[in-house]
Amino acid sequence: MSNSSVETITQPADKAKIFMAIVVVAAGIFAYSFFSDLNVYARVGIFIGSLIIAALLVWFSEPGKRIVSFATGSYNELKRVIWPTRKETIQMTGIVFAFVSVMALFLWIVDKILGWLIYGVVLGWN
Image 1 (cartoon, helix red, strand yellow):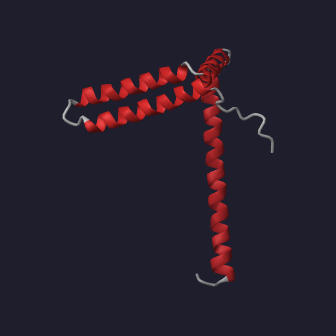
Image 2 (tube, rainbow, N blue to C red):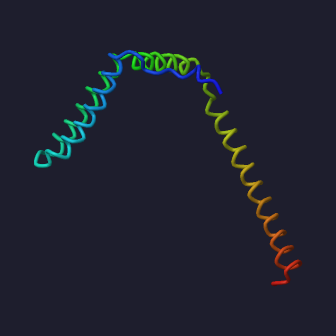
């Protein structure tokens, strides 16, 4: 098994940014719990603010830039997808429901036959 596709954070500045982001989120969680006398909206605001600050810290690191690049590429690929029409979607949904219904009926019949064979014929419990 090769580990060549695993990328680690090697730059000390990036490690510091990621660590600071974790500390900021932990501080936001602590502040939410510690300031219990404040209004709930203020506490949630403090927590969301800490998440935004942490996201900015991660965004300016190299792994964050790779994540943003990946998300941008994924969004561009998503725009190129040819989505099915309403008619195609309804037809495929009907096919799936029909298949599931037939399989359910088939499995119910197999279950009843096996139950009759095992309990009725082999064990004689009926």
